[in-house]
Length: 440
Ligand code: SF4
Image (cartoon, rainbow, N blue to C red):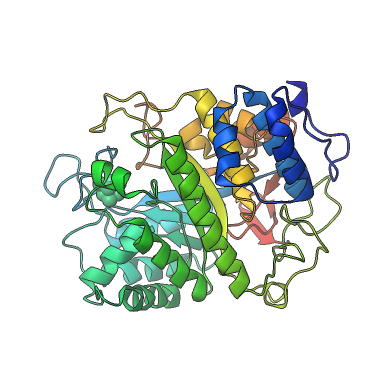
């Protein structure tokens, strides 16, 4: 495991050492800031030198983020688990009137927002099922209700599949001009106070997998449409990949390639040429990082583009690889990915998605112990302190997944990294108790 040890020089991590010599040309590319191909990705999956793959991802992760490990203090809320669809991998949804089905009213949502503020949260992460009967007005009202009692709370809400569903129930969806309905919905929600989009619902961008596992859900082109329009409207978004069910490794790589191209386009719209290095505005100076900016793998002069210098948004912030958990789903007969496959996949996501600033090990799904390992395998973020989170269970355990700032700090420091509290937009946060301010 020495290859995974922290580099003595945070800004110039040592060239990763590998036992599989076939990986050397890939290391040359990574060190030179060159893009890995799909074939390179296939080799990263095929090699028996898993620790070499992790070392390569760790090299890139340290060059981008040094030893910073980001987390945020947030609350998750599901407004309803009633869903018109029945995705085979999903154990969250209920049909209306089925035992356990719920839909939150505005009083509940208001109380959740007040509770979030009282717990010092900077973000509320909100998703739900595709409710067939809730009217369109419910959704902007939900956002306005939160903003009325918690104006500083960042609202990260509604996956792409929900946005398309909202366009349909608002009667703005046009099959021959999908983007106009999506634009209308996102503009209305943004005006109400929506701050960014989560990355869920991407699953695996492949029609075979789509038709077998989540037929009825939007396909990749519509998922990408939503994120494209969000970016054009100046909303940052995130991305996921839900892997380890009926997908093949090659399909995961294609999914990453599609996301990488979409991010290229987003960065181009912000004025990024690929030569100067992509710099996020206002990224934190961490305890051991002296530069106030973070560049991605294609290193060059670390200067922000004019658009970014003005703090303009409109790109993917984070990729979160999500392992499939079979328990309670229609695909319970499958095994789901192993811990080693999870480590390999997060490392490959770091290496392939060279234009994504952040890779998240979503501790609530991966467990905090696994997230510690993932910080050494390419991840730089472990998400937040979560009190309620119903949409995902870890191995059939309790639905109440929570931890504290102290536990997160302990876990991050134990793994050899420096905890950095961030807000949703990856700006550094300073706090005293529940009072906080953005300083990045
Ligand atoms: S994954 Fe989402 S869209 Fe599919 S059934 Fe579950 S809640 Fe509904």
